[in-house]
Length: 402
Ligand code: HSE
Image: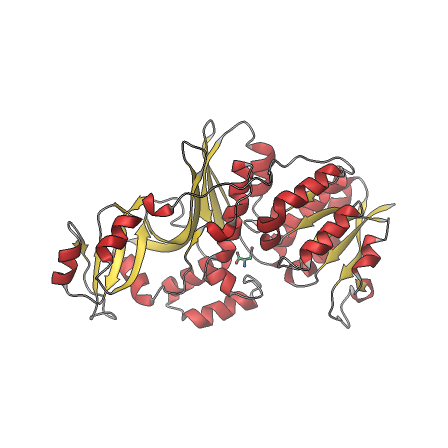
């Protein structure tokens, strides 16, 4: 006897799942109590010569209609047709695990409830933080706490890019191509560099800690596309590092301040040394205090490891739903411009023009490659105040400080 699994989507992560199931066959069998075997792989493409070629099917109903398959892995990416296929599998009585952030962020509540109603499981450990077990930690371990903050570096591609740009002066386009070839980036890497991937992940984490549905389209999101080598040099001058941070902080009324944006972190900030493809998630619980989760945030095998951990969990709990508290009611998201920060600003204005708009600012020394611009750091102010003061200036860049 063995547990039969199907994989939908034989790309980077899907092929990683097949590899993990094969390589760790014995230890997985020991943990589950029986062998776990991949029976089908759904993909529209052909894979001549691939060791799993004989398992490839092109009709999703072959999997849905096979009573032997009790667990399905979804690694296709994107909301459709993944959503239709995952729902079909749950309604056919199969538990599902997915690495698909877009699917979980948008349809998480609904799929969790279908699984619950049918005494199945819908799990999504790999959707946030690659191989870092953050979903299970929030859902199963930190259950004594009210979680007051979840913040971190949630995108491996951009962290890898920013690290290489800082350390070896790598060119943006070249280092993005490298992140793609290493299997870190999304099929359309715009989602990575414009912050949408990190945004979906913080939406998922916020849904888990608020127990309500977060509409990721309402989260203020900035990416790294406007960061130049000059900004990286100015950060070095201030002994800071630029990191794309996704953050969600509980307010007294149980709504959350949520933001995805590049920050210039001070050298004593806990995320300052998180480099390369690594992700880190900082959690603050009202009883726990601070905790930090750190590990490989993207890539074939780390992500597949998280998917297979869900497979093992679901194989050990057949027909027993592991509750996930996430209602369909939407969480209101307050206007982030009320929050106060210090800002690093690069402008094409003269010192006199700047001083008529901002008080108490510190000018930075022009860097070698950027003699034309004026660069300064503001005192702490709200986003709204910053917008008003900067309205008549020609702002080339502004990055929050932490
Ligand atoms: N493109 C994602 C990243 C993959 O770079 O973090 C992991 O979710």
